[in-house]
Length: 356
Image (tube, rainbow, N blue to C red):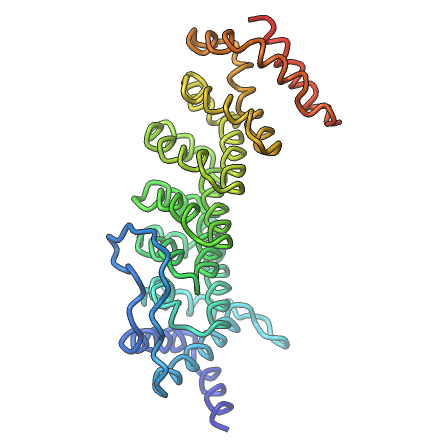
């Protein structure tokens, strides 16, 4: 009976009341539960940590239940219910109350205190509100671009295995929007992706790699500007991924590198990258990797060096010194492949190297 009564009470509340109720519950939970690890805005550690055991007192348990019910009611306002379409007016009221109560930050900061299903509701609420549009405006995006602590809290979620995939999904939704992706790209947390990819569990590392890739490929113009201005810093960090002992990380990183270099928006970055002797030596070594798949990804980066019609003398000299070995390698490389584009590219590289 009490459960039914509580559900009716939550559903009877106005959208504004639901948001304020949720805010109060989160603040009260924060007083009962241990703080999330490294929650301070200045924290830079990417060490994987488990949240301390949550408070299991009757008061904390009841607050968690109330949070779940309130989140379910908020989701119903946004998405409607089986017999009722969502109300535009109610949605606007809820969104505006969420903006003024800093609910996005509080939800991310205290995600670990919520029940398992409630965390899924949080991700759906973020997704819906981030896509909310009024004419050409995206009011949630406009709000969050003034609150860098929100995207910081989403990144910090990778430190907590219990919530990492939930916050990773929310981060992915934020990265879809250029102003928020730019905020992350230029933040001091951007290179924390490297640590999350290298030093966490497989599932979390894959999620972090996906968001890292999206940050670098979804909004090409801002990425080209960033890479041009931060070339040495970026590729200094990126080399860690190319040198990774983890097969999946190494393969995905080389593939992403090839995609970045071959994008027309990144022409200046590509020219700079293929003018480096160290970069060429790295790719030539990867052509000899024991994994054929890594050889294949390295080939797509190496071809940019070899096919460059304006090779710097130092690059041309390295290729000349290794001419015979490269010709033998290319003649025997992936001869079972039927892909006509690959066959054409390999033939073109052979001719380019033979002509040196």
